[in-house]
Image (cartoon, rainbow, N blue to C red):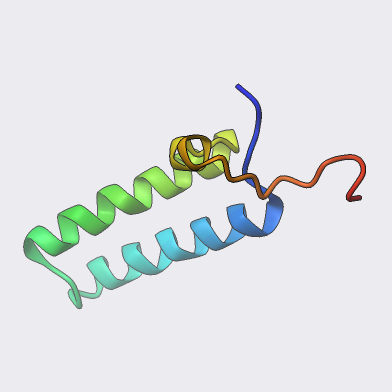
Length: 70
């Protein structure tokens, strides 16, 4: 699968996931909202690690810089 997530996008996803985890462990979020956000944070981390976002593929988006753009 072709990578479609750039460096800045990956960093933002990891930071958002970390914020969700901190909010959960400080009991600012709880219940169903916490579960949904933790799952979303897990997806963010996973897509950051593999540099592929299925939603970006479906929408035809790409934040990965090509050789011409570098």
